[in-house]
Image 1 (cartoon, helix red, strand yellow):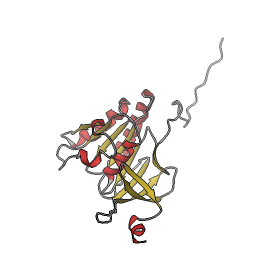
Image 2: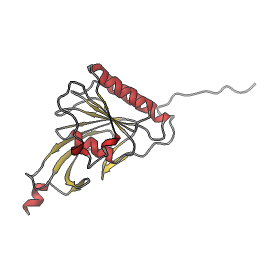
Image 3: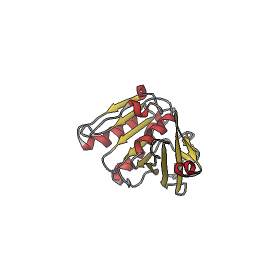
Image 4: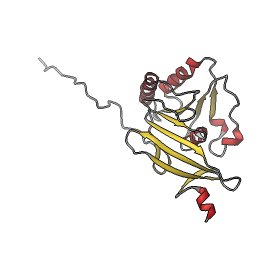
Length: 212
């Protein structure tokens, strides 16, 4: 009679090899198969920079009642507008539902949820689980970005970033990016300058460089 086999529950993941994180800039990375938060007045710019570092389509989910709309002329330096798929739910509860279902499907590599406010802990946990399920179904595990206004504050996110504009009149484009929260990295501030096709890190504020 064959010996009984015991299956022990552990905290170790049973998924295959971990996919490489998405690298936007040096030390600015986003792990796939997880949900991350970007807040601040330049949060959408950062989302497009993440898209620039990836391949494939981008599903952009935003409320149908939100004022304004994305202007291709403003983001085509980062990504081809043809990569963007827009979804505009009419009910608030459908924003996170669409995000969760898109992550779970594992078909689109980057899911951006442009939200009116930070979701709660339960919703974020559901997004993580959905992204993990999508990762099991896809060779390119999905990455979820939650764009939230002001200082954000969604609990349980893998990382939280704050991006704000620091342009110097019309002389130069500049931003300040803060890594506010990360499970495996300390808080850190990055200074960024604009380029013709994206942006790059600088040693300090662009205004200081112009003054020298």
